[in-house]
Length: 253
Length: 253
Image (cartoon, rainbow over all chains, first blue to last red; front, side, top):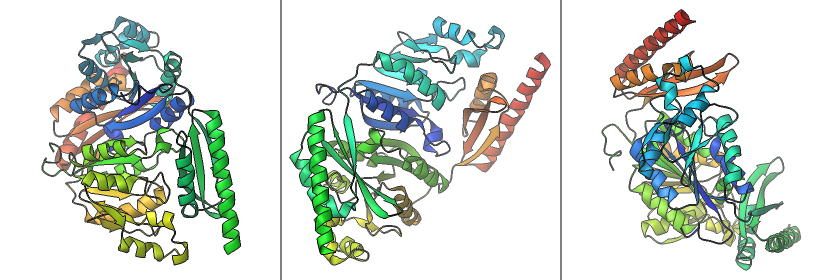
């Protein structure tokens, strides 16, 4: 819990469950969405895992992540078919029973006729004992929260609606602020002085991200900190360094 | 090594290294590409992890994955700036030294003038002792392979060029074949009989993936097996089941 214990910091992991992501058949659209969403509300995503629809793998990953981070968010595996095993895996990880939950069954019945509520659809109402439901505006099938684990759908539109419901219930830390400086220089020209700036600003994380556009290779320097003054100081130091390197290059050109 | 030891099966994990993925600032494009690529050449991706630019995290993930799967493919963290720490982490995980590699330095000099080969750019030639270089057609900075770990760039175009170089060197298993049947039914209408088909075809993995189009909710049934006859038999059973469910729904409609 080293990370989780830091003051002002709330941590999370994302666990994506599904063979279809690992085979490449389906391209994940949830990791980036959840990561950006949580960052914006002051929760730091520290790890992501993708595992197959296989009980020991899902349970193992749940146990590794839920003890280490403040929150875990899972996506996938809560539909009505035999390969939807997430709820059972979560019950197993927490050592609780799982059965059709009357609240979840009632939710399903708001959009499904009783005659259509067959065994398969009732699977979507199987909720581990002690869990709270995550309602959502897109689907009548709920997600659920148990302990620090939030179990959400894999379909992006449903997952996003669930995350909107969950967000107000989450403990959040001091938001990580970030600012981006376009270097107008190649990474190789600024690596050493940028490293010196990073060393001189230990409470600010400085990342360098190369990109290429019509005018050639370039870099974005991203400065991140929870402290706006330290962020501003580091950004100014980066800008000063960049101006100095550009001037040096003009002289030698 | 349970998975890796299965006959006809070669397994892999993908390790994405980078704060920018976890913050959501950069949306990963490599996981889906590598997963599909490896699946197509007969290597099963069994796990993906995303970790921050933090040495203990990277080393821990490397060690967890490289002992468990036949191959590990990493992306990110091999550029010229201070936040590029992947090569050092890999050296640490393998317990080997790391220094500027004359072969890598020579590669850099094919596109970089000697006068421009500063300390930062030379970082890209730091290669763990005993590693083989991964050349590529897009960038003069190499990736490398040590043991069963392949270290690749994070920039998608460079990573893809590196994967093309690596692929012919990999041991591959019997390719996982797959076929998709469009159900023309909602998942909830087929969950129970589909589960029965899955149970009757234990050597075939059957997945159900809901989707929505202009005509409403629908499902794709994906059957996967290394054995073409078993695949065909399972697909036929799925199609027969779907026809029977559709006929039943027409009768009750």
